[in-house]
Structure formats: structure tokens, C-alpha cells
Image 1 (cartoon, rainbow, N blue to C red):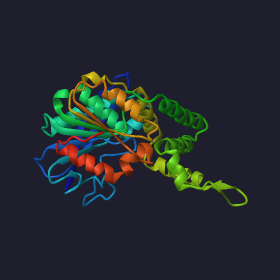
Image 2: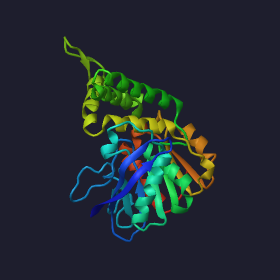
Image 3: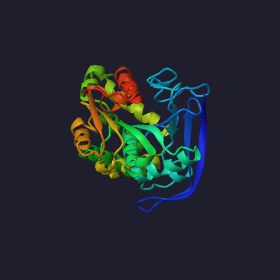
Length: 320
């Protein structure tokens, strides 16, 4: 059983001066009413559709969130989110920060009568939003779990995302912004996975005698072709830049925190997450996992993450 909750925010003024007009935040609530709530913001391509249900079969974390699952909908409610900008606010590019995103969650919690949530579990960009929320609103959260995100963006990631945005800007000058978005997505996919996975998955042998292609290139092009169907150009530009603008003060986060790093993650490597862990203002546990899936391990390593998440929801600590 799931239901959407929409809260109209009116005009939202953002930290860097832009305005979201006729703004609203939409959440999707799963589970049994009255149970403690876990908020789960995902990566930039994620949505409020976290889990499967009768009406919707494309939950992006459906193998984690279900009745009897690692995040058990018999014991908890789960709130998924659509992060801004959405709707008409993607017609123009805006500068939005992870603090802006965190502030927009509060009216949704207030609407639901939630003065304090059981936990927030965020991954990738959603992990940055979760960190910002915990920094700004320490009295609204019991505990925090973050996968693949730190207190600041990793410089190599900033460099590559900058190239992605410039590809789109260049393509837009000739009216081909969506083609630029496709190329940006292709480049992004090379940072979400690891070189080891690509070596195991592809042979990079030439295909055809003319118009030669390669299996790895065809995979990336397929990823690029799909992307405009789910991601408006200006929304991508805003969220990509938002990652690079992300900065929080770890010392202000006092909620008990579990961090999950992946050794092959190119965008939030373990040493960056360790640097944040050392500065957090509350108790922290850093768990480093092995995976060939790099930054995307939160979508792929269901077995490993299931055990960690079960322990987290039950308040058990694990050895790093």
C-alpha cells in the first residue's frame, strides 16, 4: 500500500538567489500507518518511487524495501521523495543546493505530523541531501545512514561533471541540448561503475567492417538514448551543479551515523568518507565494502547491503 503526498510550497527562494515558482514537494509513503518513518532520498535520477506496490512496478530500491525485507515495511513506513526542480521549474536552469533540498523536506514532514523521523537513508546525491538535513535539523532525526557521499564533492568528480555540463551547453548552442544530455550521460556512466567491471563485462572488440562500433560504446549509447525520457536537460544541469556546490560541516551532525563506502567508488572514495567520519559530531561507523560496481553499488550489491541495513534498522553496530 502506498500513497502520494503533495505539499504546495508557493514561492521558494533558494540559497543562491533563484526562485522556484508554484513550488511543491511530492513524497510517496509506503508501509503501515503509524509505524516509524524512514526517509530515503536517492541519486539524481531517482524518484519518490522507492518500492514496488500494486499500482507501480518500477521501484528503484524494490529489492531492499518490502514487507519482511531488509527495510521491513511491516516495521517501518518509508517516505520517498521527488527532489527539486520539478514541473514547470525545469523550464529554466536554477542553482539549488543540498541545503535547499533539505529545507524543502520539512513542510512534507510537518504535513504528515512527523516531528522526528526514525532515520534518513540517502545514497549518492540523496546522501548529500541526508547529510545536509542532519546538519540543519538535528532535532528531527534519530539516526542517519549514507552510502557513497561525503561532506564535499570529490575534485575528480567535480572535473568530470563540469565537462558534462559544458557538453550540454555547447550542444544547446546549435539546438541539440538533448543530444548533449545523451553524451553527458554516457560520460557519467563511466564514473558510476569501475574499470574492473567494464573489463569483465566488455571485450571492446570491433563490431562490423564499416561504421565500426564496440560493445562498450553501444552500451553507453543505449544509456544515453534513454536518459532524456526521464531527465529534463535543465533539471540535470541543476542537480549536477548542486552536487558540486555541496558543502556541509560534519561537526554539526550529531545523530548516530553509519557510512557505507565502496572501495572502487570513483566519486566518493573511502578516504573521503573517512575524512568526514573523523569530523562528525556524533557516533559514527564507517563500513567499506568490496564491489566491482563502484558508485552504483547501492543499486547492485543487494546481498551485502541487505545485511548492513537490517543491522542498521535494528540498532546493531558492525565491524568496519
